[in-house]
Image 1 (cartoon, helix red, strand yellow):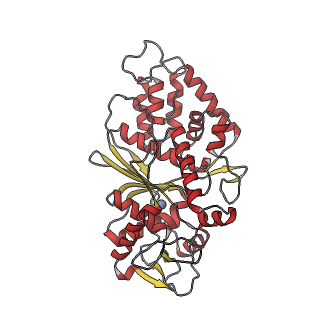
Image 2: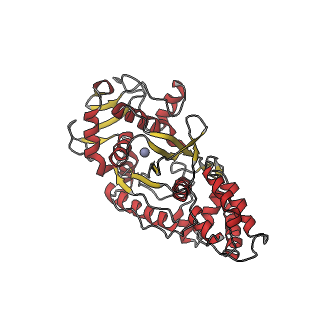
Image 3: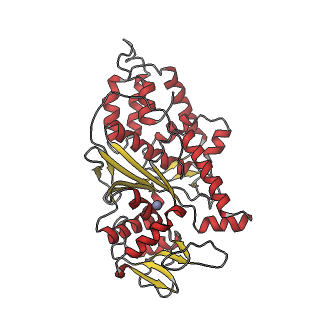
Length: 397
Ligand code: ZN
């Protein structure tokens, strides 16, 4: 499906280098990308509601990685999905009397508008779950028999490799599995943690033809199908919010291991959750700050980027008006010094960002460009604060 138009991107002086990110499996930094290439799969939205700041923080983090890789001289292949058929979407359709396709189309379009307004580089491949269904059917057919079985017509994935990404013990996995769409207690399953590959047609639900009879795909296999269609495992990074660590990314990895003998990714990267009014920002709690509302309020989204970059991406953060005000204040100062040379700090900014996207350090270094100490002599090589902020941070001054 179509993505969105790319933002402009100023050139900085070339600076090949190595980018490291923290792998969730070990907590240790790993070099990601090799031989001039990097590949990234970032799990997309389920389009039943608008993009909130929790989503934005995640997608801005991986946009930062995309920019930092490019700046280090790598060619980036970035793939993202839209889960445009899933239980929450059908539930929203039933609740509101709308067609699930209309909701998905409308919310996906709003997401594109939000991402474009945030100056997020678009994916090279943007694919919806519905588009992936022929690949899902094909992949299920390719699974070794030991990994797939049916319960009352529904097909499940079975693997001993579950838990490799999250590293949790079984009681912890079983508890969270139930909270995040899994069905550990269903009779007939070989293992409580087996996940749905294909849900056979139910009355009143959409269904697609397949070798397993009419039905629709389970959640994890959609991302596997889209990732393997466009990228080769292991990809450099699979990313998403920390609530995707288990079961989603764990199950994706186990399925790719079963299909290819290789892990899905070299590194699994997860962003911290964004809180608001003391709770995690979530659709179910209703405490959302929507990107589209901020746009309507006239908030400059460059200030939102700066506000969210104030803390490291892996930290849980609280969104409030004070944080936004600090982002706006910093933006104002940077704009007043947009033509200041940033050459003296550029190497250090790059080193900070290539070290697990250390945005607090990068912001502090760029703040120093505004202090007056480095503004003498004018700019000769184009590395102004404006160029560095735009190319590396996506912040337009
Ligand atoms: Zn996914």
